[in-house]
Length: 263
Image 1 (cartoon, rainbow, N blue to C red):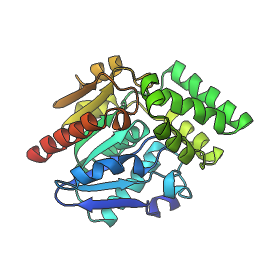
Image 2 (image 1 turned 30 degrees about the vertical axis):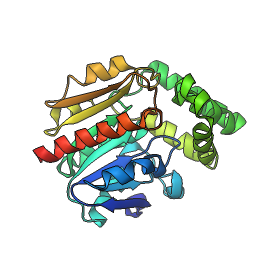
Image 3 (image 1 turned 120 degrees about the vertical axis):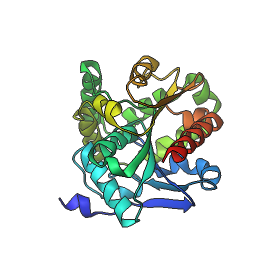
Image 4 (image 1 turned 180 degrees about the horizontal axis):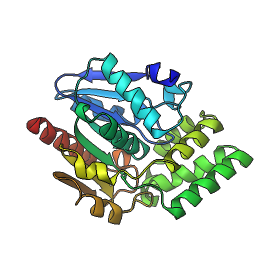
């Protein structure tokens, strides 16, 4: 399909083993920019915009698997044969699809506030309600609530500028992008079998206050891979890269370093 031929916008810097960092829903590749200075000393860090978001706003997609296909196309274009993949939330869904469809390119998978489970009935209903709201009222009311829920209340109160910047970036997205991404997430399959089958390590970053991916789900999933690591962040909700930047960076460095030693 035509979307598979598009080249995603990206930032790439550093040296050594490739580390692919994927942003989440209503975000762009710049959520990782404050990690770059430390990571690029040890890794070739690649951060693309996923289709529909950031500078990839015009890149079409229909499913999470489409996003994985586009990533694989980018990796081939850049002649990156293997990489460690870390994905935040929706980016984790894409990372799982990449690991299932193209297992030879992955030598590590880090789920950052993400899950291999599909949406349950409650989650699907929540997405359907959000889609109805966006269709009727536009994106602004939804985004205001979404970014409020992304963080702990304490962080949002102490760092309103961070929340506002992320919200303002997302407000440039057309409603169609949010609706298409929600539909793609809602239709994604169960990929817990991927966790069980992959030969490389799987890591999990979990926030104690995360209401999107509760800690109980992460704890259950971390027993599935042959080799697993879990990084529990007691002061984080669903955006630890902002809420606990030092601990989050250390988790990425630790996990990627471990995978590099095994590959």
